[in-house]
Length: 322
Image 1 (cartoon, rainbow, N blue to C red):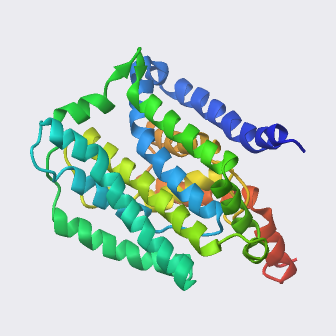
Image 2: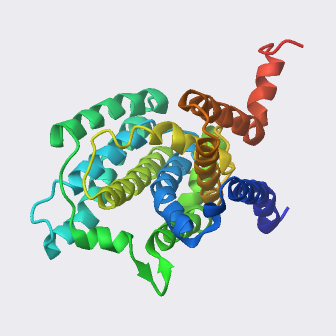
């Protein structure tokens, strides 16, 4: 099977579902198809796409990152706590410091997981608590301020195209090139497919894991900076929803939780599906309780579709009744 055919089989179902849900949402609300609503949709879905990209890189390598939300929180409060608001220096720091902070936090995750060979679930669960504590130390409660220039940038247009759309398309394109056209991307796929085989093939598994988690941190850093500019301030708990949501987006987008299979192109579709499900449930005035239930069911169904081997192994082991 050629790479193009494989990509079509992987991503076409995702975007077909996006189309169906988009039309359904439009039928429920006549305002859904308006350009203003779509621009608002671009703005809201961008940080989720960045978080989904961060999670996808890690999951492709056979890991998981439960600190995604806390890294976004730290980056967000850092961006809103920089000195000299509404100065050029502040805008430059807003664009540089949050991604650097994210890279450092991701690097720490990668060193512990790749160097110490500790389980990623436990490590990122622990570092998530540490990073959340750092976010609360920097900004104990919602507040801070962001330069109006930064807010105007993400809320503006370039040649008539909304900046949020350009931002997430740029990051998806760059991540796609890294995942499919570089030795780093091929190594991540190899490790996710079979870590022992990758090791025997000469791949420096520990180093690749450090790089994968560092990239996850950088993307979370940009997501946090974006959130701060979008809100004109920051909230130390802003990243909490992105832990489960990023996993859902990665899996819905076609990446198997077992690693080694999937890609970043489906993340846009996964984010749109996840966001539009919430949108449709709100339009139908569904209780918040049932919305949480729906999100959990979405992850389970997506896992069954993208990683059927997990359920096959469980069935062979007697995990399911015949």
